[in-house]
Amino acid sequence: MKIVVGQGSCGIASGAKKTEDELVRQLKAGGFERVRVEKAGCVGNCYLEPIVDVYDDDENLSARYVKVSADKVTQIVDEHVRDGKVARDMLINESDEEFLARQERIVLRNAGRINPESIDEYIAAGGYEGLAKVLSSMSPGDVIDEIKISGLRGRGGAGFPTWFKWNAAKAGRGDKKYMVCNADEGDPGAFMDRSVLEGDPHSLLEGMIIGGYAIGAYEGVIYVRAEYPLAVARLEIAISQARDKGYLGKDILGSGFGFDIRIKAGAGAFVCGEETALIASLEGERGMPRLKPPFPAEKGFWQKPTNINNVETFANVPWIIAAGGAAFAALGTEKSKGTKVFALAGKIKKGGLVEVPMGLPLKDVIFGIGDGIKNDKAFKAVQMGGPSGGCIPESLSDTPVDYENITKTGAIVGSGGMIVMDEDTCMVDMARYFLDFTRKESCGKCNYCRVGTKRMLEILERITQGKGEDGDIELLEELAVKIKDGSMCGLGQTAPNPVLTTIRYFRNEYEDHIYRKKCTAHYCKALITFTITDKCTGCTLCSRKCPVAAITGERKRRHEIDQEKCIRCGRCEEACNFSAILRD
Image (cartoon, one colour):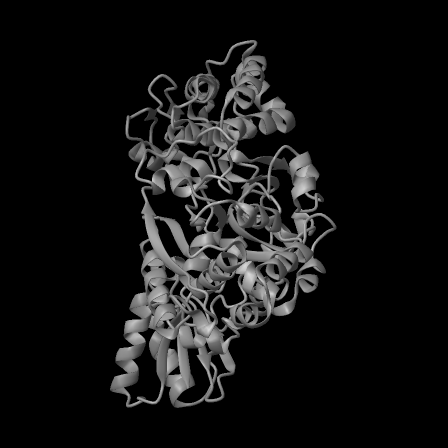
């Protein structure tokens, strides 16, 4: 028997390490030395962590238990391990099983199934078969042709054809070439790459080795943000194991081809997601983009031909080589092949990792897999592409999730962040939040990006504070166009997207803020008024909770709020047991 505890960042944050420790302690105390306790990465159901899987002696999954805090371990040990009975009250239900059953998993094929710190488990799951096939029977050109057949496009945001980038780097002239992985995942709400690094690091390594062979590179670099300590630790283990097994080094599998990988921990600058800024950071310089051409495929890291892809792109490669490019191309749409990993977050009932074929309608992801909006509130919009993307309204929820159709909405697929918003979300404040992020992350090289985003943010802040003026919307649109046209890199060129899409689809909210001095979602503090209705019983609880003594009244009589004193903290509303506080 084997018991596996999910220990991605989401699981550990929910107490999975304590659950593991308690399992080990109780199994030892009970004399169950034959039962192994192992770890795995995140299976995807982040909302159910800690997750504990029990396997029988034949390595078949016999039960998946969810929300297993340390104090619930005793039940699993007593009922399942000792008595051989399933502890049904902790068992995953059918609806939550559907979360995974409705997905098509290629990148996440090993998620939650293997120990990320065991190369043997990766090999047993078919790992490094693609590499063996490449080195034994394929030329570099054959590999690129197979990637071309697959239709794989870069999963980092731009969606550029992977084969084309590889072919350009292969043709690049230089005595040395580099294969670089961009693991600097910086979008708020995005955790796709982190989960792959934590749960299946060898799939990235194998993809990079195959890519290195295809372009003629002998060295690879993984640029990963230092804020991902668990991912970095598991990458280091995986690289060491791959070297020991002969998958990295001078003569891989006796083929004569040599390739090695090292890790570079970045300082978490969002702009370093842009490839030339990333290269500058790798070289020890400040992370600032440069003009292109020359492109990295011609002059990249240390002025040598360099190819850069993100984690998800590389993780697809071993599966494509092993199964064939045509198998990957059979999934998705005509122009957007294969699957895409998304991080479902925000006001969603079932948040976590989702991998679906390209072309699936947005509503099927949000309602079919994510089970809809928390507390059954109305679905308002979904933010795709992070700070570089845009907000897609409920009216466009039939939009297929692929590069072409999402771009038409004004958003982008991006790296895969999908933040769901409900009726209580203020779209003006949402635009302000993302613009504040990009303004802070701007490297400052371009005037329009450095100054323009600051001016746009100032306008948005005025609007959310009830100080908006006639002409502000038009000024935002004018600035947005100039920033997009005047910025050198993708950060500045896409920074106005959240503002433009919210104006496009939720212009009425901007107008309400400016002209009616009201926040449609009742979110912006400066535009909220709390009043006490006739439902008040005079219990005095609200007045006792008010931090500024703005509420007065006699016991058992309706109370009043002094609007001059009120700081709109909402504590009175939270405290009232009679729904007598009206937010307007």
